[in-house]
Length: 285
Image (tube, rainbow, N blue to C red; front, side, top):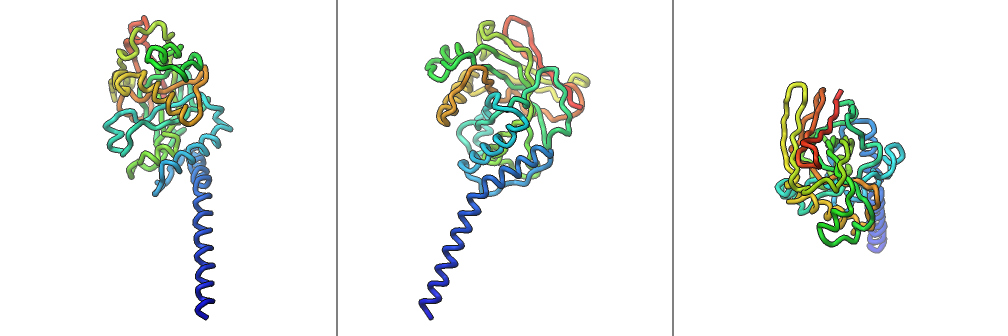
């Protein structure tokens, strides 16, 4: 009788372990599908407790793969949370890697419907385009910048997706592909016209009432934009994704977040190229 009890207990224990691992295996695709549905339906997602960095990365891959059917292939990559103070608050030591799909990137002046996202906001950003694959072997800052052919004024419109009532963890942000939703690209500036990428400055404001004015400087991007380019390059190489010509890199937020409301939001840059200023704008409807 005692042996029978031990054997029965062993069966239940093995079954419990099997169910646990089955649930763990299903957790990534189930969670990715849930995020995908909230993204496409523009509905709020529930917080995901107990995420690990490795699991969040796997969920991100599944989400991007699912979205790619309707949003196109990979257009480029973004560095999220480049500010060291915010990194410290979120308990991370480096930025997070996000992926832009082709249909996420719009040309200025763009029109975006406010209802086309769940919890959107806007930031003045900076985009660069890869000229050739030599960047993957570049050692010095000069070699890295020589592999860039365009610098592009950029307004990113990320989507938090999760409820604003609860804190957003770094792993939750990674799981939703760092909030990548839309980005608006201004007129490209040839890299050879830019003397020092670190000297650019930006102001972003709603044109109608001059509200929500935010300002920033390119030097805030990890001390120098080239440092973000290097980080993105190294991070992608570590994942066995060498950069290809034509890929875009978003270097991070130059300003604090701007709330979304109806109206035209314009970012004006100085210190880029030989023009006094260049701009990029988006109309929210």
